[in-house]
Image 1 (tube, rainbow over the protein chains, first blue to last red):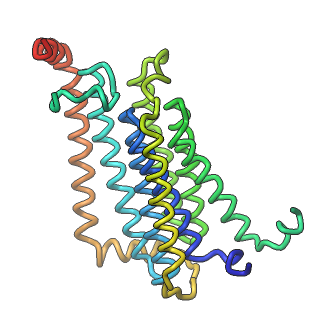
Image 2 (image 1 turned 60 degrees about the vertical axis):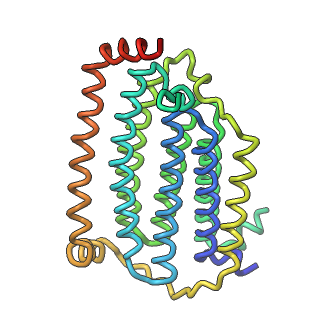
Length: 106
Length: 185
């Protein structure tokens, strides 16, 4: 019981595993391009949480936080580009359903 | 119930509260029927993760997460949702397909990761909580100077690129539409 009460590395790993799985579920099942992007953000957050947890509980340094900050920067860049592409797709196809935008496959 | 709460150390109560917020709102992102509700549920997840960073003593990172994710990326996503959905058909474009296949796969991945997290003997050290801003600045301007500079370049390119993509679409939208319909025929 004391291991359950004492918050440690394992708690964060389990939480981040759940977050990652839910992000995966979002990416796999949603057909709306913006919703798929939200799933990617969930996955990135799970990864960053793991980085920070490992650097806090295993290493005791700030290296993991540096990586998490880089993840945030790349997520911001990715969101900006992806949303520009989504807007472009919407103007072209009048829909952002991932099933409708299959011109290249046809 | 009250005795259980009293037995918990205050830090544990804080952690379980944040974890509940994060997981519940992540479930909301995954299965909410309306895309707008998903976007607002994402707010809970991102803010909860910021709280967990603060819980681990990562003060600068927690505030940065709040500023950039909640103040920037989430607003951007909300803009995209509102710009690309005609309000009337907001539900239609968000129906989740393949939940029967996706949910067991996600559960399997979660179970595997949890099994690995619980089964491994991690070399845990003593946690030292100290302000991180100075150490982060040192790390960025010494060890990680090159990635730091490249990250600023990436941000600049992403900014310009996003503008170019969005503007070109606005300018040639009509022309492309005609070409697309001709190819379609």
